[in-house]
Length: 251
Ligand SMILES: NC(=O)C1=CN([C@@H]2O[C@H](COP(=O)(O)OP(=O)(O)OC[C@H]3O[C@@H](n4cnc5c(N)ncnc54)[C@H](OP(=O)(O)O)[C@@H]3O)[C@@H](O)[C@H]2O)[C@H](O)CC1
Ligand SMILES: [K+]
Image (cartoon, rainbow, N blue to C red; front, side):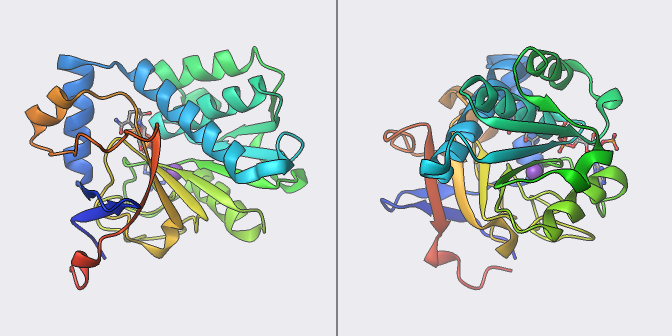
């Protein structure tokens, strides 16, 4: 099931774009206009951390939080969120699917996380971890095929537990264009997608959908042909999105 638009709680219509269009937004930002990947990932991670704190309410900061990170940009955003949560006194345990495959900005995020008081646990410790909140930063919009290997193991761990899951950008294992999952996938209670919602986020796996502002200026969207309302982030750095009734019956 895909949709062309979402709405904010104040009724603003927000266009949904495909993974391919999102990649082009990323490319124009990184290669032509800005912000760079560091700047966008930092905004993503900090917004994700703020959402987690809000969802925990008075259980913050004592509630144990487990952050599961993959090997790409999605993982980098999760590692960044883990740092912000640890910096603010949270009880954080980070598990990276394969730290040896991290490179570039995600690898730098892991090194920075190492300077916090947050814990880093191997995948083999998953069975011993207790969580009151889980952050799913395993797979993002570069999912290709059915989730496999350690990523699938992390997804199964999330699915087998009772803790609510907050997914970054898209529930891991779900295709952000089609909303379909060819294999194991996360059933999130909340999903925080970045910059612009994707057409595949109408899936039941998404839970409550949030859109985070990661600082991309309108010139980038103009070059990619995406029309975002000027008032979209007037109330803050994240907005709640709901399905746009006008989408009923979209294929
Ligand atoms: N402007 C933005 O929207 C920004 C988004 N950000 C985040 O970046 C991700 C996209 O990051 P990317 O590095 O392109 O890819 P992912 O993190 O989605 O995936 C990374 C690796 O996942 C592995 N993979 C892919 N398919 C599978 C599968 N079926 N099973 C298991 N593993 C899979 C693959 O790793 P390999 O080691 O196998 O090569 C991918 O490399 C986006 O979603 C946002 O969260 C930026 O952080 C900021 C700007
Ligand atoms: K994810």
